[in-house]
Every structure is written in structure tokens, then in C-alpha cells.
Image (cartoon, rainbow, N blue to C red):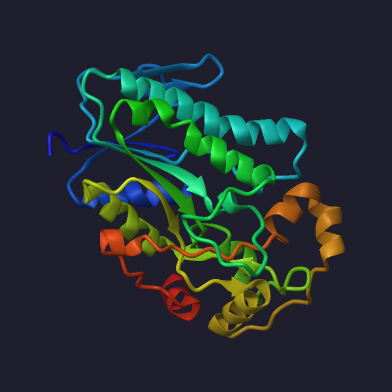
Length: 297
């Protein structure tokens, strides 16, 4: 390795903060992309389109995880623009900056999402499946396309199409559990929509393998390959807690309370598999949800 320096955008998020600790334990020096201190080694001002990198810190790799939360309130035109810009503009500016470096990093791992495939219903999709047609699919498509200048500069580029990342430190899992672990959330809608998930430890292991592999590029779905319906998912959380489920939340109530955001994130069905794990020698430690919950809870 020419250096042990890695830059993470979105370093304060669920995956970013855990990855920072994991990489540090493996001997890397990890930097974040600062949005407030213009004197920081790596600084970004999205409004002004300014991104500055220290000339004295050569980067071995960049892991791009930046993006505003999808579930922070109802979606309106302004909120959807924020969700879009926080991903696509950040990635474009990042890749333009990387391509202009005298010595670009060897690899860029750039976040995407299983939303790339749109709502798949009960149909199983994998990395070869086409892009969907809804808002989240268009975001994922443009997010990946925004890495174009990095690819043209010869940087090995991987698209991390995340499923639901499960951890009690953030993400969706705590939302399925009532305060004090008094009960699990009941099914949402008819409960037949599929949830494709991966435990945080498995997501980190996948990323570490992708960093070390010198040939892998393109998309990879970060999922357990053992998706569950919402009904099954909430039932297994209830069993793991040893607590009951609260009554179901009807689809009409979801639409009334959360609007388009609720339909896209709570009622949509994504049945996603990965067929590329064998290329990096990855086998999930938590293929089944009960084994993941035993560790996470």
C-alpha cells in the first residue's frame, strides 16, 4: 500500500461511524469530509461547490457514504431536492476532485441503495436487474452515474447498493421496537412487502473485503440474501424480544401520516439478492434474521 489514509464522507452516520472504528483497528488513518471547518484537511461546502483536499495526505481509498436521511419527515419538493442534492452533487464534486489529484486513490467505494431496482414486489432481483422507475430508483441511478469522472480517471469504483442496515445504534431497527423494549412494532399495511436487510457487522466485513480486492468493480448488493416480509420481520423481532407486537398500522394510516415518504419506505417491497459475494469470498455471518437479532439486541 502506498498509504494507510482513507477518506469517508458521511462519517458521522450509522455505517460511517462504525467503519471509522473498524478501519482504525486495522491500522488505517481515517479522515472525514468536514462541512464546517474550512481549515480541515478535507473540506466541503456544498452550497458554494467548494471542496479542498490537503496536498500532504495521499489517499489510498475513499468511501462515499454522504446523503440526507430519507425518513426525516414528509417529502415535499424542497425535501426531495435536498435528498437528491446531498447524494448526487456531493458525489459529483467528490469525483471531480479525486480525478484532479496528482495521485488519485486506488479505489472509490460509493454508496447506492437497493432502491435502484424500484419496487420489485415478490420478484427477486440481483445486480444484473434493470433500474426501476420511481423517485428512489432515479436517485440511485444518478448517484452511481455521478462517479463518472472518477471512473474515467482510472479509479476502481464500486457501488454499494445497501439493503436495510440493522443495528441498535441507528438506522431502522430501533424504529421497530417500542421504548423500554415493551413491545415490537406490529406489521405495516398488509405486511406482505419484502424487506431486504444486512447486519451492520456483515456490511462492514463486505466493505473491508472490497477495499482489499484489487479487481472488483461495479455494483454489489449488500443484503443477507434471506429477505423477509414485513409481517415475518416484525414477528421475529417480537420473538427475539420476548415481547408482544402492537396492533398493525393500516396502509391508509401510513399514507395519511407520512405521505409519499411512507409509501416509498414503509409500504414498498424490495426483494433483493446479491450474486457477487463469491467474487470477493464473502459469506454473511448473519444470513438469517434470528442470528442477527441475537447479536444486535
